[in-house]
Length: 82
Image (cartoon, rainbow, N blue to C red; front, side, top):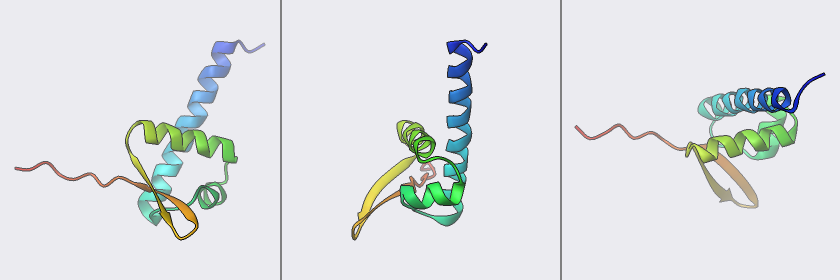
């Protein structure tokens, strides 16, 4: 029988892996909606939302509106000034 600690670790692992998929998709395809991310990554919407939250907390995402759509994109990393 799995303990709550095991379930927590398993959940965090899944969220982390999905975060990598979200980051990878956005880095190659550019900004997308949650619906597009969910479809293209092939994960459940709640897991994609958790992954987006993870990346947002790490300050890796920006959010904006285009028409009626809400999009998510990766924050560009500006190289430090020499």
